[in-house]
Amino acid sequence: MIIKKLCKEHTKLSDSDIEKIEDIANALPLISDLVRSDIFIDCITHDPDVAIVVAESKPSTHESMYEYSVVGELAFRKNEPAALRTLETGMPTRDLKALTQENKNVRQNVVPIHNNKREVIGVLIMEKDITRDISAINKVEVLTETTEQLTETLLNIKDGRHALTYHVNDAIIIFNKKGIATYANPVAIELYQKLGYKDDIRGMEFNNLSLDENSIIEVINEPNLISSEVNVGKLVLQVKYALLQSENKIIGITMLIKDITEVREKEKELILKSVAMREIHHRVKNNLQTIASLLSLQSRRVDDKSTKKAFTDSINRMLSIAVTHEMLAQSGIDEIDLKTIIEKIKNSTLKFGVPFMKKVSVSVSGDAITISSDKATSIALVVNELLQNSLSHAFKNKNEGYIRISVQKGILYSSVSIIDNGSGFDIDKIKKESLGLDIVKSIVEDKLQGHLNMDSTSSGTKVFFDFKNE
Image (cartoon, rainbow, N blue to C red):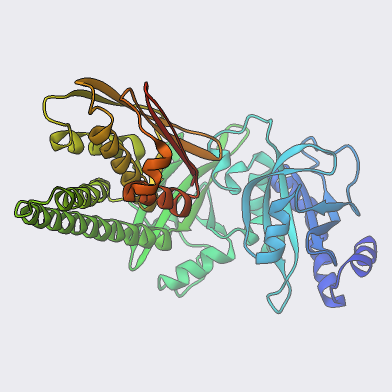
């Protein structure tokens, strides 16, 4: 009666939905003992960010984490995102951290409860104390958290509708010690029907159901969880085995089968996209270098110094972008290291950018920052422009000097500074006359969502710009 009362007061569930919830609630003690965990049923309230606990069960074979009953208590999205997510999407949620009504940190496994119309009317929640020492195998699948009580119950279960394995998305088959399948959840039955099996797989021998090369003897003799990946027709399946024990004796085998076809297909798509992106970046780099070469040939026919300088600036800008595409072509991914880009720009610039008979050293230091290709291209243009300006103007009255480029990673914004010990310049005058600085300012503010600061004295120039992190 308590379930009906809570549902009528706090939810929009129909009488038939409530009956379904009550039916499953009757099986909670069985499920709780199966997994030796606290089990709950939550239903969504009139507030989409709040659920209510309508039923609970504490394991009789294991210590509960709860001192008091939480039936009737509210579960808020900020504390239990797994429960609210599954209520909304109908998708199971695995191993997500939550904060209980008694302010304990737990991890929740949540599966939906559907009515006859396949609508989500509630969720079944299993909780584990995250402070407990759980082995790696226990974290893989719900069923591998079985204990002696779970083993004996599953092997003798008659009503599969109420078993937790009924709600698991992976195929689960239980074999007794003779290798006969005594239990199969609905996912397993459906999977083998896809594979062409006409008869009920329950009662079949292990050798007729095994999908890999492992024999039942090999599985029994293997102390650890056996895992393999097999291709069956168009399906890619991950098969795992776990021994079922009671009083240190092997009494059966659990076979878990996960359909990872979609995962492998997505991996193939990513590989193909990576290859395609690499080829695109390679071609863009080659095209930019070709254009730069053509401009270089054209500039040799020009005598006017200002026109020649315009050619040189354009060539350097193209080559700085080409550096980014060259690195992306090598990595095949859309992220590259900022310091590596700046280092390559420095090397390219020093080949022909240092004034004749001048000894200028350029160093790059600072933090490693990974950035997207779009951001890398913008920063490459800015650094190239500032470095070119420094090399061209800072050392007119000096025979030697240094330029230090530094990268600093921040929480919200990261920054790049270019510092030289040149002769300095009049910032206000340069800002009015320099197209390069206009380009730099525009890129920093519009593309990088950052700020540009300059300071110049007779002792040198400091240029600082920042950019918003990814």
